[in-house]
Image (cartoon, rainbow, N blue to C red; front, side):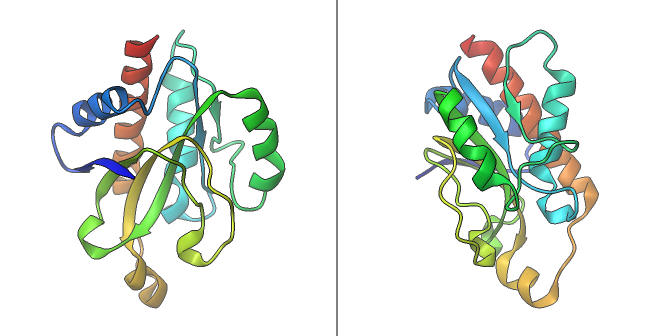
Length: 174
């Protein structure tokens, strides 16, 4: 269930996400982060880019991150990696980019529940995570029919906001 959403361009995006992560119990002191995606496709870069930013900016904060630019977690390796992660981690927050309806493009959506990665492209991968942050990068129909490109600037903004929000929320709950 979607519990909150905020537009990428909102000057209050980070604060809204932090508050929502905490008040909706989407993050806690035991939460590990799985950042899904690949660096082979700009539309699917948010997860690994966010994971890398968290690793670079977490300082001494104890945040376990799976999925970075150097070691992405994607549809090719998720089935082999997920059982090991789920065995070790009590709570998982999943970060991924999504294709959505036109009205949600440019939105960051927070969900109480996992993500079904690749479902917009017909991939059959089980739900991942206890809670999720989803960044809507493009309209599904427009992407599939026109292969409309997403700007790297938007990918950077999504990733930076999500990274900062996760670090602030983890600081608060630790």
